[in-house]
Image 1 (cartoon, rainbow, N blue to C red):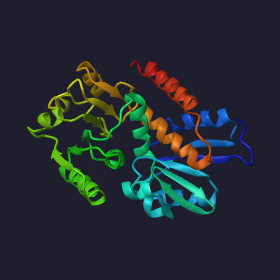
Image 2 (image 1 turned 135 degrees about the horizontal axis):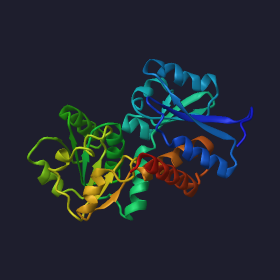
Image 3 (image 1 turned 45 degrees about the vertical axis):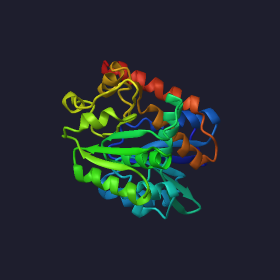
Image 4 (image 1 turned 120 degrees about the vertical axis):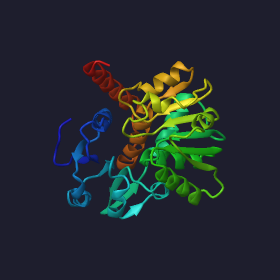
Length: 293
């Protein structure tokens, strides 16, 4: 598509951001619908975050996505928060509306939509075990509790961080059942065995790439196992779960659906999911061939 003086600009702020597939996904969607938008990846140094957000207003950008490590830090620089962003305590989408910067979070609902699409199942009444207590865990955990899961268990290398997430869950949902446990604990296998849903939400691959860390987890064939990473499409964690007979889901669906929700926030139109999915799958296939996976 041609860029004109009327082209609306959206993008993504992150550090690093060169690996993001969001530009490919969104630009395919804009072209498909004939919308005069373009999506760019913006590498933002930590000390420049405030100025980058101010630049949305100054340059009249339509909005941006926000990725690691800025989803929590960016809150102080927006004018308003959506109910989801306030609940989660993080922003992954900023909307520029009539001079106001509105922070949204589409991660949690994006996960739910991907889960239902993949497993044809509701999360209500299920026990969920999270590996990791970062921003992705927080967004998904809050959404799951709001959807009526029976219990959330958070496992993290840094126990204090897991406790903070559980504390936040209980403050927002006083009747919820939430528990933090240490990663290196003899009870991990026992707790894992009673989980209905197992989610790897670690951000640095320490769980996926460390068989010794995975070993204490007792996969059972009835588990629904998710990994929030999407490259490679089948990480070691999901390979082990699949080998145990579990149904699995990678992070592509969550990336797709959270992006579609952001697309609707910026444009007011429904996103062409099939176009966005095809663009993601084509790119991931190319990356897999290039890396020799």
